Image (cartoon, rainbow, N blue to C red):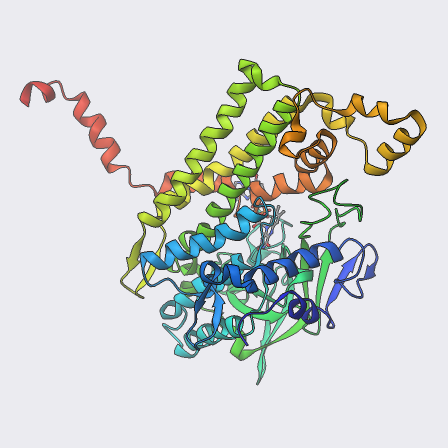
Length: 490
Ligand SMILES: Cc1cc2nc3c(=O)[nH]c(=O)nc-3n(C[C@H](O)[C@H](O)[C@H](O)COP(=O)(O)OP(=O)(O)OC[C@H]3O[C@@H](n4cnc5c(N)ncnc54)[C@H](O)[C@@H]3O)c2cc1C
């Protein structure tokens, strides 16, 4: 079948999935308040990939001779990475990078997992074959994947093996057909809108008592015994004028509860081998693999935020002041840095001789992943500082209409900007409603948390960067400059 359009995607969501929201099961995520809008946004993603105008940029002729999204392709050359980056950029730029979990993110993740067939299959070649077949299945059926990698944050100090068993999802037993999984994993973003879930990679385990958690598998979102516990939806179910982001991009986050879920053996690719499990993320070059999507999305998101910051400054002509220009200039520098990183990531890529797969440049990806969470927080601060009270002076569509009817059209002059923004086709109130949905609403708060955490805790990651960085060259320079004979010798 290969690629699906939006209608085929939406039809696939009507199954037995157990999505818990606001005290009840969601009957149909394609029509329920708080969910339907996001489902239709993802459907638009699938229509976008089927649009003939996007064929060459988004798709390739796959191993079966069908058209598939480029994110499913295991990169075998630098050109493959360039093409994949361009495909990521097409949707991300189209949507201002507002959908962190556009399906191409996890398509590529699954391709990255399958590219490490040699790693998964080193003790049991069957597990290596499983991962290849899982990728084929995902590509052939254009499966939309969520992922739950992380141990629930219950107790981060006590080793997992000394905690109550099965708080984190682990294997209860092996059956003739597969394995039984019990426990919980976080945080399945997009899960209500996905077809399948993949869990693997974490936690790093130690010893026999934790071996049950050394596990990697895929499972349909509607598998018997699998429950998805949602936070509140931040889609207020209002017009896209009033909530332009929340009404479109509420990708939702969920806790996965595995209540003795049977996982078919052919869906398992990581099974109770401490060494293979613990070394998987590095062996797979997972950061370089998956980070490519993140970097491209962040370029698009920063470009959008720059546009937003510029327009709100222009609306009151505060961009004529040097202090505001400095803030705007900082966003420009951030964008230029991220664009440069995106280029370096691909142009500095290299082949891994172990599997013949091309991976983005590790230094570029690491730098991009570490910088953006801080950039994002700073940009949001700049936008708030530039916008001032205007965020609070942007009434809803209905409120504006009611006041205009009561007072007369002249009331509108209190809600216009200094600059003639209508030339750009942009009015001030909708602009500030958009900006508030980026910096101030519930979804805006969630987006900030997302950027801080979704790729792991960046604080510990930075410490890890320092610990792993080869410091020999840097130390050599210091040693040279400390040598009193150094320049006189040359
Ligand atoms: C909006 C959002 C969406 C997400 N979506 C997904 C998803 O789709 N799939 C998925 O798998 N995950 C997802 N995540 C989870 C994400 O991967 C985790 O948030 C991240 O790995 C950090 O784990 P944690 O939240 O448990 O925080 P922790 O790792 O527990 O960190 C919390 C705080 O405690 C500190 N801390 C914790 N342990 C230590 C330690 N040993 N030493 C020193 N300090 C420590 C950290 O520095 C941090 O400040 C999402 C997270 C968010 C916020």
